[in-house]
Amino acid sequence: MTAIKEASNTTVTSSVKVGKKSKYKVKPPSNFAVVLHNDDYTPMDFVTWVLQTIFHKSESLATSIMLDVHEKGLGVAGVFHFEIAEQKATDVSVAAKQNEYPLHVTVEPIK
Image 1 (cartoon, rainbow, N blue to C red):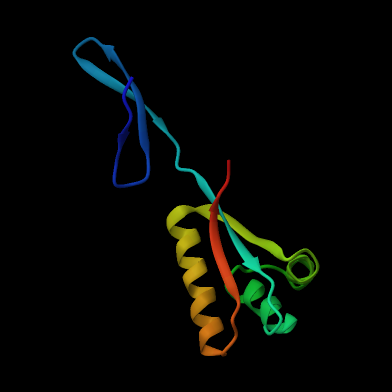
Image 2: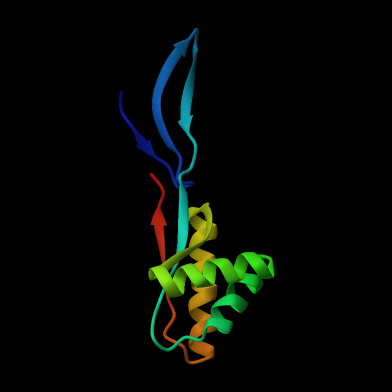
């Protein structure tokens, strides 16, 4: 059994011969968490705004996640396929830089 990495982040895990054609079992793409990290300078209102604007969270859910970031040191803003998670993280970083905040965001695989 060999694994082949394709451009679309899918991995072919094995093949089964059926007559003259091969059928492949394709592993679905992995999910990734977009994680916001606490710092001493980014205001809570900005984190709530990011969660509502970029991640389309309701006000109450955005506030809850923001409090996790503030109290626990990090909070999961959302879980997405890799490309979407990377784009959301980039959008957060750009918004933070434009507003001169050091908000740190990472994309982490979900196991």
